[in-house]
Length: 119
Length: 119
DNA sequence: CTGCATCCTCAGGGATACTG
DNA sequence: CAGTATCCCTGAGGATGCAG
Image 1 (cartoon, each protein chain N blue to C red):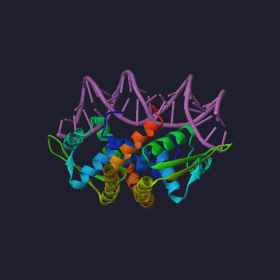
Image 2: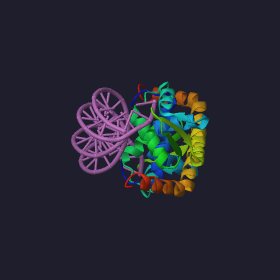
Image 3: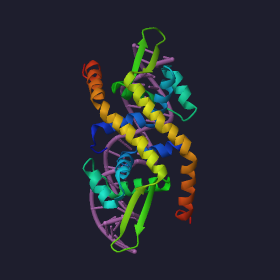
Image 4: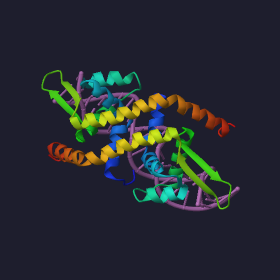
């Protein structure tokens, strides 16, 4: 992707499909990997790869804390850092707004499509 | 892209690379097409195609109002609807947060990369 | 000036299989 | 359980050209 301001990258991680869902779930409480996956699956199918990638981005950005307990079988807890909590709250606000206004948006789309699309 | 809840699409439009920049600029005042393009260009290269696509998405979602004056050469003003203003404010809040915390994020990345990447 | 239509590329991300 | 590695394919999105 073209060169943009560096904060774009952070926004990208945080507002990405799975980023949003991860942050909102972690805002409630820490989750394990598979737990997170199951929870998100109810909304859309996450591949392990993408969930892992998302979590690593967020961890790298200092938003998520990864606590891998040295036991077997592995047990890894993901939780928000203070910084991550701030981010998650911003994102949740946006998500809530989207939910609230979804009706109006859907309506607007109908109007637009009627006027233009298949007039 | 896989099937997700419909509000994901709205978030996608609103938090897209150019969506964010468009909304923030329109929050200040209405803009013409080329004006918007020039303004955004200083941050990253927008193709006409993408700017047009972004504006159409936002218009379709009822967030942006398109006022095409029937003159020649064409003169088109884009501005926010009330709904769009709400969205833009959410997005701006997120963008401002990202700016404020960018230092911490950058720092976290360094730490992460030192510990992992090229240890 | 404001935009559609077309072509083409390249990387995001899904599926699958394997490891500690 | 919690990932990493690989393959592969779709579609986002840049460049260009044309039209009203």
